[in-house]
Length: 306
Image (cartoon, rainbow, N blue to C red; front, side, top):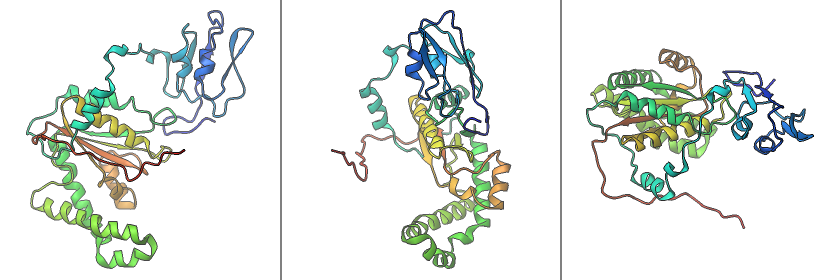
């Protein structure tokens, strides 16, 4: 049995055209699972594999003779494509410039995002490094303001039904169990989130997803590496920036829809198939606010090991 995902629990199958193999060893060098070795100037499959073929396709992509085929775990040779020319790859300076110009946008023009751009964002996000393949990242796409608003209104109603978790009596009761840091976060962030998300939505103000023209929710499954949805969401955000859209990552919705029967019913209503340790919304649209300056941000700490 190979490493399991919701999509498959079987290893991929590797086949080699030995008549055309010249024993160059590129596949041996590319495989990180000790699946190949060169014997009598020909590549052969070993019994040393740690996980079984996970279908990463590195051997197939590295083989200059095209003699290796990997099938299974959603992979097939037909998915191979020629790499883009290096001349069109962004330089460090151009990439840094895009990153420096990016701001979190929460005000958008009343202008829809073209379907082509939605598709391009998804195409780019699927290139993200998402752990052991095949990716177990799931995406829910809200493609217009009406869908985005409907989700926000429903989420606000859902929060109303669980608002007791932000009550003073409950936070006081739980403080000995979840500790000082969580208590501070609950009182300074979670409680105000409830107040704004619920009370202001009743007034018609949507601070949940800002009535963005497009929103995407990235989440995982019980098998997913917790970082994978975040990485995919980051790629989607950068793709949106490259397409001239304003973007913003929203992390406050995800934690509220993970635990309990009401959360499960809410997920099912919106086509969210699994509870997930990590998840993230990204909103997109044409920015209705523009900045003249940037601000340098810093890490909490950079420790250079000597």
